Image (cartoon, rainbow, N blue to C red):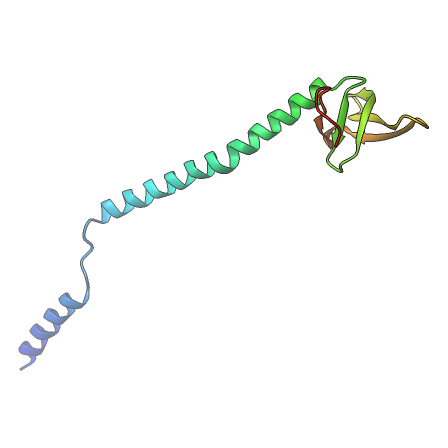
Length: 119
C-alpha cells in the first residue's frame, strides 16, 4: 500500500512543478529589451540634452559687446561687457538712464538678431 502512495505522490509532484522551457531564450530576450530601452533613453533624453548644452556653450562663447540678448528671466538688453573669467555679463537694459544689470553667463538664453522685430 505504501508503494502505491509513493508512486502517486511522485506523479503529482512531477505534474505540479513546471519544467523551464527555453530559459536561455527568455534571458536573451530580457537582455535585448534592456538594451533597446537603453538606446531609446539615449536617443530621446540624453542626446537632446547634450545638443542643448552644446548650443548654450556655443552661444556663450560667441557673446560680445553690443549684442542684443535676452535672459532666462525674460529681460532684454544690450551687452555692455562680458567677463568670461568671472563668468559675468553686464547688460544695459535702459538707454534713457543707462541702467545696467549684472548676470552670470548661463542666464543668457539667446541673441536677438538685428533683422528680428521687438515684440
